Structures are given as C-alpha cells and as structure tokens.
Image (cartoon, rainbow, N blue to C red; front, side):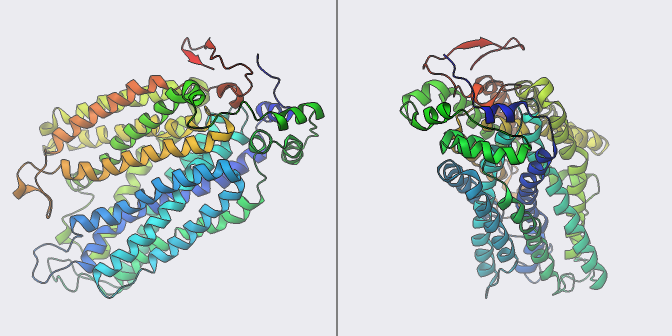
Length: 537
C-alpha cells in the first residue's frame, strides 16, 4: 500500500519551471564549471612543467616530466576526487546537503590558489607541493558530484528533472572551454611580452624565466568562479526532501519551499506527526532490505560509471597523435615553451567546442523526452561501434590521406560519450535511491567512475605504448600498442552497454515513487512502463 505523498513534495514535483530552477542550475553548475576547469587545466601545462623543471643541457628534445612524476601530477587530483566523493556523499546524508555544500567550495578556492603557489628548492620539491594541493583540490571537487546532483534532483519537478540535473553536469563543458580560453589568453600575453626563440634554435633561451608564472596563473584562476558562487550557495535553503524525509521536519520543509515557490504550503499535522515517528522501517546501506530493493541498481550505476570512465579518460591517449598529425601542434622542438602552451590549449578548446559541449546539451534537450535508459544504451552502443572502427583498421587511419576521417571518428566517440553515458551516469544515481541514502549512493557511484578514470588515464597510458621498447615514449616500458588498447576499450564499452540493463528508468516519475519511499509493504512490485521495459518501482 502506497502512502499519500507530502504536500510540499507534491508541490515540488508538479511546479512549473520558474526562476528558482534556473538559479539552482547556475549555483550548482558553477561548481561543476570550476570542477572541470581545475581537473582539466593541468593537462594544458604539463609540457611546460617538463620544460621548466626537467630540461637537461644538450638534450635533443625539450624536457618532459618523467613517467612517475607525470602520473602523479595528472592523477593525484583523481585520487582526491574519489576520496571526496565517498566522504562528502556520506556527509551530505548525515549533516544535510546545504551544510556540506559550502565546505567543498572553500576547499576548492584555497587549494586552487595554493596549487599556483607551489614552491620548493628543487623540481622534486615543487612537484611534491603541487601534488599535495592538487589532492586536496580533488577532495573538494569530489564533494561537488554527489551534492550538486542530489540538490538539483531534490529541487526539480518530475517533468524536467533529468534536464536540470544534466544541465548542471553540462557546465563541465564550459569549464573545459574556459580552461582552454584562459590558457590561450595568458600564453599569448606572455608570448607577446617576452619573445623567445624555438627550442631547436636556442634551447636555453626558449624557456624565458617569466614562463614560470604562466602555469601558476592558469591554475590559480580556478579559484575565481568558486569564490563567486560561495555566497549564493549559502543562501540556498536546505532541500525539502532532506528536511522532510531525513530530518523529519515536514513543517520546516513546507515553510522553506513556500518562500522558494512563492505559494502557501501547510502540511497536515497528523501526517507530520506520523512522519516524525516512523523510523522503524528505515533500512541502512548495508541491510538486506537495501540489497533486495536497490542492490542491482547500485551495481548498475557503479559498473556503468566505472566502465564509461575507463573508456572516456583513455581517449586522451591518442589526442597528441591526432593534434600532431593534422598540424595543430608542431614538433615540440620547433616551438618555445609558451608557444607550446598556446597550441595545446587551442587544440583542446577546438575539440571541446566541436564535440564535447554539443554532446552535453543534446542530452539536456532530449533526456526527458526519450529517457535516461535509451540515451545511455545508445551512447554505449555508438562508442563501441566507433572504438572498433578506429581500432580494427588502425593502420589505415595512420596514413596521411586518412587523418581527417580519424579526427571525425575520434570526435564522434566523444560526442556519443557526452550525449550518452557520461551525462546519464551522473543523473540516474541522484534519482533512484531513497533520500536518506541518495547522496551516499551517488558518491559511491561517482567514486567507482573515478576509479575507472584512474585506470583509463594511467593504466592504458602504459598499456598503449609501442610493443618495441625503443619506440615507446621516453621512460615507459613496452606495451601492447594503440591498436590492441583500442580493441580492449571497445569491449569495455560493450560491457557498459550490457550493464545498462540493470539501471531503471526514472523519466516522469517522482523521486519517492522511483525509490519506493511511499511503500508500506516490503514487496517489490513490478510495473510495465510506457517504453515497454519492465522496471522495479
């Protein structure tokens, strides 16, 4: 028997799209804008760090970060993010979404600035300091994943909830664009003010002393959007679903949402009393009841996010080959240090503009029309197709005449990742779990994704090296080659397609209905949805 829903929650579910929805998208989305900027901007300056701190007199090529240092600088923020997702996801359910929301931003502001102020007596000391602050920066970023998704899902109406959560995540695209734009502006300014010859002409003079400021400014800029958002985050009321269903204060929830919705809301006193006293039937994360109701759901969200991120982050492996082959980035010897930053930033900005950003917004436009399940299934399917299409005839794509085709295929894999599982794996965990466990389960799902990102970005970096050690990148052992690595990634995407069948469809349904929070009995009912899929409700 299903209980009647609280008036305040019903009012949120049926509310027309209005100004407070867009305010919430911007407030939560600016956090994701900052997250993307901070996570992706490091890849724009790693070449510069190699030239500045690891140049050896007489080397034919500019200095590069040793493999272990490169892995640490690029990957330590992912480790921090994974930790933050688990910790702040759990804390968001224990203390409330709003109380924890400001903490994550302040960590991001402080650590963005501190990253740019990394100093030391030796290159090793500077890199160690940078890695320390990048870890804690990632820790703050990790908290933003479960909190932003949960807050947006609990504020939204059921008709357009998917689009609102996806819009928050889509701000990542603008963060990546902003990172490229800031790097372009800073590098052009320094290139103009401090001209330098190419490395091949004068190795020592190709890196001007002022270049040390370039990477610091780019990293510190990430503090600005985070700081600007802090005040507005603190003004947001706690979500009604947390206040009513977790804190058991439906009267306060109605008062808070009356101000937000600008309508008068009052709860039935008897219903309020009943809700406050009804704690016996609540089950925890490690209970048999949770396993029975949501065990497969959690397996579905964690596995699909993990598999998606293995494939998504490993795609960066052959970015440098693409950029070089189509002439966007010349040989490093033919550029000075600051010029290289500009070229890398411009190339990544173009990729983001052409495939990453459009993919996000296709999801926003269509997620509440065709559903999360369909978009995720379609995304994994086309990622599998394009990955195999790149891998099987890989030698064909390496010929000069076929490079444009390679770039198109590469861009399409990114497009269908973003108009597909990269967005939906973020949306779905914020909708299908009970309010008291929603942030925790989203954090677990997101942390599983980041574990996949670490494997994708670094495991495949070693795996994709040339089979001939002499042809492998400097400092790396022999691998299985790019072609074989791409074939493995094709099968990873295929597994993502299969595990998507564990994830229920939440389109057009209230959060309480999807999470079975209004059910008195413990029997899992099966209901056939309009899309002819049978899903647990």
